[in-house]
Length: 239
Image (tube, rainbow, N blue to C red; front, side, top):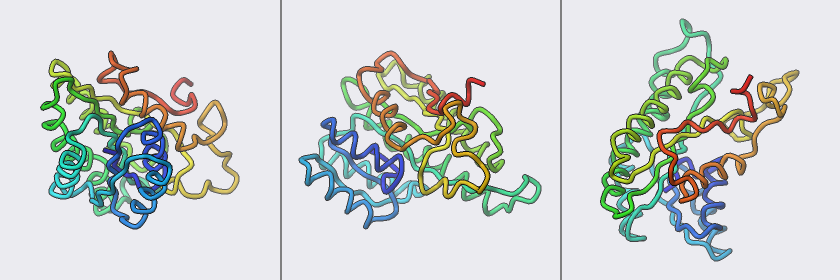
């Protein structure tokens, strides 16, 4: 199950996971984009299913999880990637409605997904794995809007708490600390600002590069990794 699958990192992950043999359930609000992505995946022999949903709605997330179980017989892994943010004003000038929206999508969205996914994963003999998308803003005040920084810190907290609670039952939970990535959410880089200037590689990440890290964390190749915040940031957290 991949949330935020209609574009960017989520769409790249959907294509990559399907190419590696996973049956993917794609979750996002934009149904027409999901349908187009499902068509591209199935045309190349992959297995994919669209489950339009807003992650801020617990009933909609529950329906998406049930659809995965009913269609494919269970759930092995989840990539909770849906997120939203904007270049915000200073904290004291930030509107409460903007704070609420950012927290709803980035924190409540992950909360809703974990609440619905974990019971299904606990029902498997081998457990399962969850990857949540955080950000370099989850570790540093990077110049992003204060609510976004707070939200991405919260995602790391939820990740670590869930990893500690469910590790003995075979459920691994990790997070990606993602740096600036070439997606619609990032938008245009302001004039005069080098792309990925915080990265020691001096460029933006491509969505596929982040998707590859998620694939590794969802696979048995990372079988002893849980509760981790894995940076995919071009080295900006190293300096």
